[in-house]
Length: 346
Image 1 (cartoon, rainbow, N blue to C red):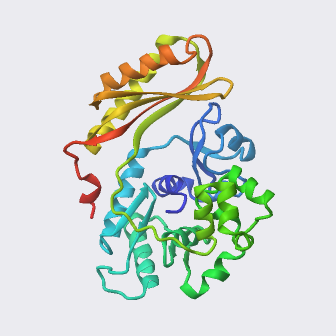
Image 2: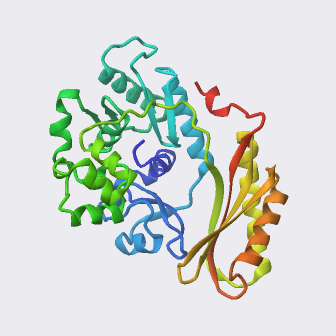
Image 3: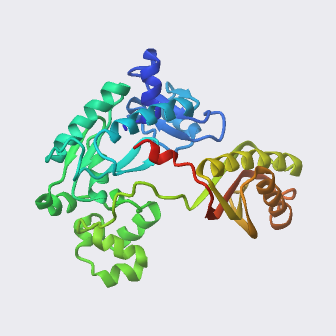
């Protein structure tokens, strides 16, 4: 979907159309940008940017707090549309999904036509635009979907793969962030074409297992299937505070609230975990995690909070150093009677 949160707000509030809408935290706080409309992006505003910086770049920006109830409702409508075309759908987030349309329900042989109909259908139902990438694998389709936003449709045919990838900047490769990009640049690798000149051994020497992925992706190789449902590896929640915290009791109250959120998600997934992890970011931005693995699996908020608070008291400098962020996650799952919420959409 195109600038999903901002697009939903502009759809529901006509007075925001054509204006720089920035959904996320307040610019007076330590919040970050979740989504910026295309009007705001012209000023350099992008997701994950501190809201205060977004305000400096775009003083006329209209800042809105996220309304996840609205976004989830629109996402559910979109998933229903996708289910009209294929059952093989891998939902990545509220606004992104991979689809295998090899055997689609409309029995249309041309996947480009399927994508075009799907985009039209989504707009008819939600009045929101989507961009699609059509390619032989997930890696190429993902890159193609980002190239002509908003309302784009880019196709990469098998014979076009080398020409498509050769000029592609390495930062466009999924998994390549600022640190990896810098390392690649130091090796003289600016594009996928440059990477073709490096051997598999050379890339693995510098990047370990990810070097194998880089070697394959530079050649357009990706054998990963579209997975209809992938169980989460961990479930968590975190909070960045308006002001750094020093009071231990206040921190414990926040942990209890986070534990409630985590417990609700565990219940929704129908899973229980044995490892509780506490995440702490101090005022100087130093970040640590501390975890505890239990003999018995847990899912109740009270138990999660109890263990997180114990870790806070015994394994961190809470009460002695100011803290700007706390987070809790639960992992090491064992299944219980899972509610098949995801699968019911299809």
